[in-house]
Amino acid sequence: MEDYLLTILGSSVDYFYEAESYPIEGDFSHARYTGSSAGGCPFNAGAVAASKKISVKALDMLGKDDESTAFLISEARRLNMDCENIIIREKVSNGKVIIINTGDKRTMFVVDPIRPHYEVDEKMQDLLNSSKYAYSLLHIINRSFSSIEPLLEAKRHGSRIIIDGTSKYDDPIRVKMLYDLADGLFINKTDYQRLKKHSSEDPKTILFNNNAEFICVTDGSNGTHLYTKDKEYYAESVKNINVKDSTGAGDSFAGTFLACLIKGFEYERALRYASISGAYACTVLGGLGGVASFEALENFAKEHNYDL
Image 1 (cartoon, helix red, strand yellow):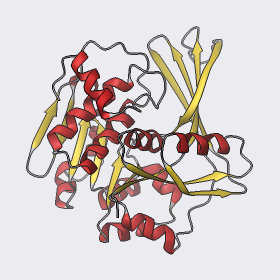
Image 2 (cartoon, helix red, strand yellow; image 1 turned 180 degrees about the vertical axis):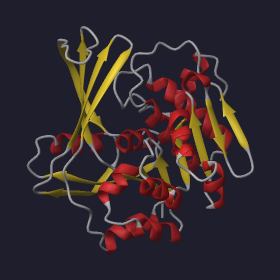
Image 3 (cartoon, helix red, strand yellow; image 1 turned 30 degrees about the vertical axis):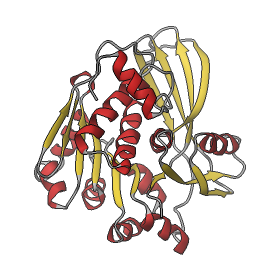
Image 4 (cartoon, rainbow, N blue to C red; image 1 turned 135 degrees about the vertical axis):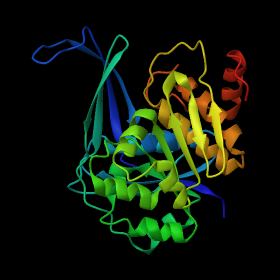
């Protein structure tokens, strides 16, 4: 059976606007609609991985009567994600994200979907169990499952659960969920410090004692540190790029890193490809900016004198 990445989605539509001035409380600013795209971190990361010729299966629940459902499914299919496991239900509303750009500033308003937990049957459990990696965000996992037992069962069958670590970590239940589940963690430096503040000891110590495989700590222009149980790697950021929109840069990093691991890359090489992918995504408008082949990334790296 072919190794695949399972993306546990909380699909949304991203709506982009350009505002004439950055609003403060009580003020207003006129905004111009500039476009929309399918989005959500796992959606973006899955599309990025699929563009590297990786088998990607999508698990999601979308609203039968929501006007954005057909668009989200058509986009997932266009981006070569397997949509067989997307559930269509009544009385479900899809999520959306309103992104307002004002010069170099960006404001994001996230409207959460309304939906019940999954009813995990034998087919869905097998989907989880058979994945090489299952990737999502903590709040999507919390919204999708009534308990984490199906994911723990998948771990017992060899699936590796990968978490996007974006969170405030002021909820101890959320912190425990991360440590119980995460075989791999993508997290920025700010959120890592938040997690550390709400943990009994350094998160790296806890995760590696729980047999986690890796932790990627991103720090914008300062580059990325990758930790495994026995080694630390570092990749500098890509210099002199023409930044159009940083939306989805982290998703591009994660999707490319996981695609590289499935392809059999060593950690250090995967880290460098993920870093160039995050930079590439910043040169394209929208969260799907990292959708690009390995060849496109290699050409981009050459143009920017970045050693892969």
